[in-house]
Image (cartoon, rainbow, N blue to C red; front, side, top):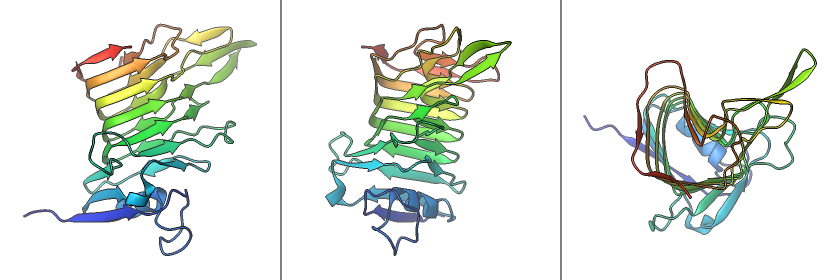
Length: 239
């Protein structure tokens, strides 16, 4: 039969995790938590009054863990193909990892920009451990840094400044703008990249990269060395 769809409406830009009947309204974090605890496919949209708004995360990243079917997150409020919602990292949490979004299920995002993910322990901005589609978005200002010492020498380990994927990944009409996995220190581990496909499949279409800092051999797009995967570049370009 036809599977039912649960509809959720985000009504506040405040980042909070309470009962939706309390606090500032239904936040994105709260709604994703509700979507992850039902047995239906989910459609998440935003109130028209939030158009052009910024969700500034407080501390930890937003996590999607819905194992019961596809969750669609639509931030294109007027249907013009341009993002109307921005998720921004907390600039006060530089002492630990602040990935903006971790996906552990099946998630499709359109019309949401991501700004300022910081990953001192490796990855930044978006971490995919499931099935993820991102369309009509800009991902900018991500930084990936990990320092460690061996034998008194300082090493810099990087993975991905913008997107790291351990599952299936699809990017369409996505611009990567000034993300940094350039590294520092006496040595740099050669895995830095803007997009790091660790495992699974990746399909990129109309993807652009502007000014991303990668100073070792990981490159702008890195495909991992372990496990079976396919990679399709529909129309990716450095700008």
